Length: 318
Image 1 (spheres, rainbow, N blue to C red):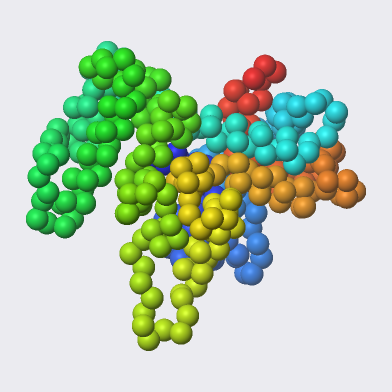
Image 2: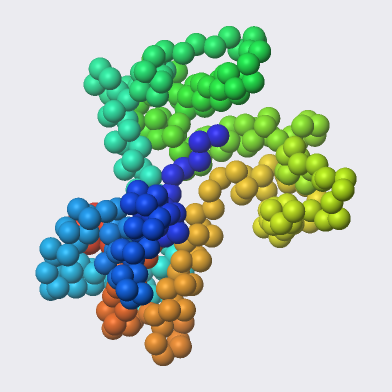
């Protein structure tokens, strides 16, 4: 299942940046002579030197003007303070906006003949440079090839489900449903059924803890489960199995297989308040944000500063 892309977390971005420049060199760039270099973080967070240069070229007055405009939009009740819920809602909106923008860009790339429709053949050509057609009823002997066949058939089923009007291909709205089924109501049942087909091995319509853990079997010589299994069991019990019946029903299953942007956004909102709330009232004033401007601009609340460069976010009317 293709899950909706989200803005990368700080840790992942830093890891990718380290991979690009080399671990030892990155360490030297990040902490020259043992001193932390803040602009290194900004380069990593904004996507590289070019993006960081664009950010720096905004004069301080324009930076503050755009940042204040964003703050006003986050402040839904216009009381002059940003609460945890307001920050969380804004971050979730930002996630969805960027996912939709990416899907729109992909649509243009996939639509080879520019007729405002992406056909299954065009999708294959963009993805694999050729049209692939597997027999649904014939398994392949090679394990890797069979795994790819299964994934390709799943993609085809999702493509067909997204095609509401049964036309020759997907229009933009249908393509978004294909790329991000978690964002579209009419795809919800398909997402659940696809997850059940993959994980519900006994066909009872639920996913047990054993099915949740997949092919894991404890080493008979081990005295306890490995750490990752303990973490997964804790997630099953405390995050997903809301009615504590030892299995995931279809709605509980949905919370597992669909990215939990709400949880990520809530965590980031709490972090910002913990770090920036100077008077302990558990909300942020404009003055507190400007006092901690660098932190706010290197957080998901502004998508690591990108929102200052996208009129959609700082324009007076959103």
